[in-house]
Image (cartoon, rainbow, N blue to C red; front, side):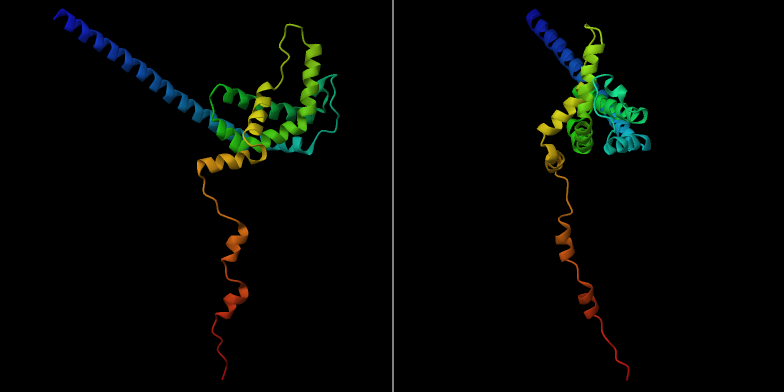
Length: 204
């Protein structure tokens, strides 16, 4: 009888432990989802802001200076330099969020992949120059890495299909499409055919 009671007590204890663990993971999962939603909202508010769009447009117009290892990005004209830092640090921050699981990978690549790759392609020589500058100017025991998480975003976009990465994701999500414009136009009546269906009344 004591053996049965001991087994029952053990099973109850194990059940309570399993329930506690499950509750902890469920609470953690809910918290992660809430944090992810908040972070995602902040990211898209930032991308849609007039300030960020202005910085991005300035970068797309391109810098006037050539890359320099003597000063790196600091050697750029002040207005352009500020835009470079604002956009690049934002994408680096986005890479941090993705690396630590605080934002969905497909969400980032599918919605911002084009901006990520275009920005990197335009600024890569300046980023490399900044890394060289830091390796020479910083103390030997100070990390000289620069925009590593931004770089990881670019690598992810390229591994996910590059130019067609967004299309791959939308197909996987099963998003509906409108179809080819030519096909839609073909289903419409031409103005001449629409006009020919009218009844002409002749004056007597």
